[in-house]
Image (tube, rainbow, N blue to C red; front, side, top):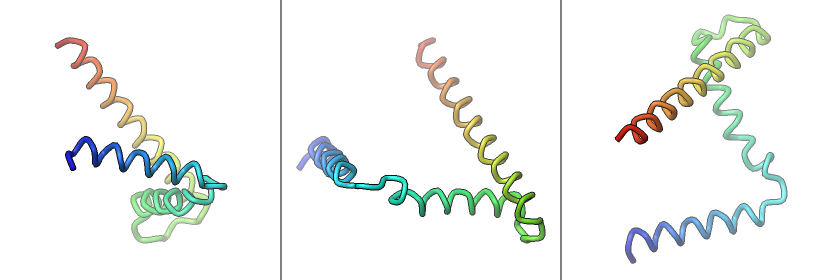
Length: 83
């Protein structure tokens, strides 16, 4: 099987799986929780901050992370357009 065929088969399987998922939010909840835990560890590695403050800082760290991704994406688009 070629790489393109494997990719197509995997994409079909993924879409079939999501089509049969009744509650997408529940299915992705563990991933969202793990992501927030990562940002909480980043802003409070020793676990000394109050929960509310840690959550606030983690949310800011998450926003900064995604803004950084957006900046990299925009730079890549500009580079592609220029070439």
